[in-house]
Amino acid sequence: MTSLAELHDVARQRLAPEHYDYFAGGAGDEVALADNERSFRRLALLPRILPGSATRDLAVRLPGAEASMPVFVSPTAFHRLAHPDGELATARAVAAAGTVLIASMAATVAIGDIAAAAREVDPGATLWFQLYLQTDREVTDLLVRRAADAGCSALVVTVDSPVFGRHERDRQHGFTDLPDGLFAENMRDLPGGPRNIEMSPALSWADLDRLRESTSLPMLLKGVLHPEDAHLAVEHGMDGILVSNHGGRQLDAAPAPVDVLPRIVEVVGGRVPVLLDGGVRRGTDVAIALALGATAVGIGRPVLWGLAAAGESGVRQVLELLREEFDDALALCGGRRLADLTRDLVTVRGPEG
Ligand code: FNR
Image (tube, rainbow, N blue to C red):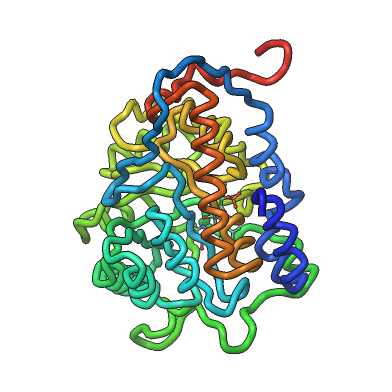
């Protein structure tokens, strides 16, 4: 495979149409979904020359983690729809790449089993747990405890989903439930029996405060787009911000994360790391986001395409392709270290750039 796009094509051929569309689709007219990738293409990198070093250092420090490169895996649900090994394969591949897997609360493998798979490959593998706050605090607290017991080194609280996005592709297929035999495993073994993941517009900053006080784990807020919310997140004790529009699956009129990134970086002012996901498909996209002030970027769908195309080995290919492409991009920009990717390197494509 020579590019993520090629793995995407293989995955499209392998997956049942309703599962492909569940993974690929966005909300409404899929304007945000399309814009996420397109926005990177509207930007250009103004390379510097003669860097004077033959080697480059891609490693980055994140809350509760040292990653071998500034690319991590964003949380996506239901990996066993893509491959029978599901999240176990993903966890092994991400551990082998030495980067962070954010395990979804809606995983089809329980968090403890995901952690065990990662640790078989690398005892020091880093996992973060993604959480949707539940109105039943006992359920939230239990999930946090299980994540901590599994050795997760941070929580990622997703806050862009007060209600489910309207996914028209799923409605057209009548795809509403997981096939027989697959479950959101973290939600199975709960007091009172299995539950569905609940999304609630009744949740507020006070609920986040309560969660913040209930655990000492580093906590990142995922789904921030408004600069004022980024500021509030820092004030409320968050250890990082993940700028995201949920891969275009929630508010279809939301902007592309890369377009709001500079304003958020400015407001946060270096107090906590700012991460980004949405539309990252090339090493040059990683370089653009870093130059605009992101500490690292996440990928969602490309991992699902790798998984569907070739299981663990497919996810490894996705991560290694991005690593190589990003390393090339850094070299071609005349950089040696991540810090060499500075804001002045980014320009708008076209005559005005
Ligand atoms: C997601 N995303 C997501 N986010 C989250 O916080 N919890 C979740 O369970 C899921 N599930 C999920 C399923 C699928 C099929 C997709 C495509 C996405 C959003 C995800 O974390 C991330 O924000 C986007 O996928 C990033 O965009 P790209 O890389 O897919 O363009």
